[in-house]
Image (cartoon, rainbow, N blue to C red; front, side, top):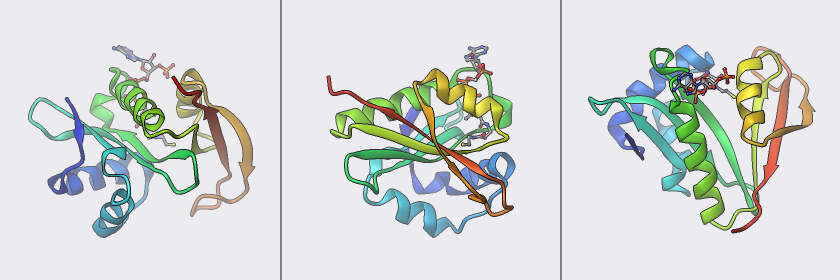
Length: 147
Ligand SMILES: CC(C)(COP(=O)(O)OP(=O)(O)OC[C@H]1O[C@@H](n2cnc3c(N)ncnc32)[C@H](O)[C@@H]1OP(=O)(O)O)[C@@H](O)C(=O)NCCC(=O)NCCS
């Protein structure tokens, strides 16, 4: 079910992003963001091969992996898809020799904050007006000890 991103995933992923994250991005953006770390862009496919969820991980700061986008199609939530994606992201981040993982989340997104806390992330900063609609964000992070 878990595989790396393929160009044919662009349209279904853009639809998940629009519904779940209320954002619209140019297809070229996904391609350019995933370019430096191809296997940081993880797709959980449904039985027909269509993306049920995805996690776009990037590494823009030395020694750090960052969850840039993460969402599961609403029909597939609370069935463990997000957990599979997060566990694989953390595994790949560590395997790449990165020592820390970070992410940003809306302060109102209690479900996602609880999810991330379960994966060892804690809030390290308040990002004022971080989102395009003016909402504040939390930056969350966790260390990834080697081994
Ligand atoms: C956050 C998100 C990615 C999590 O994905 P998910 O697939 O729902 O995650 P999981 O199913 O692994 O875990 C979610 C919950 O389901 C529960 N769960 C996991 N596996 C389960 C299973 N097999 N059966 C029933 N429940 C299960 C988990 O305990 C968890 O409970 P919680 O509500 O206390 O967190 C998803 O909810 C989402 O896309 N939300 C909208 C977008 C968003 O907020 N993205 C993050 C932006 S920073």
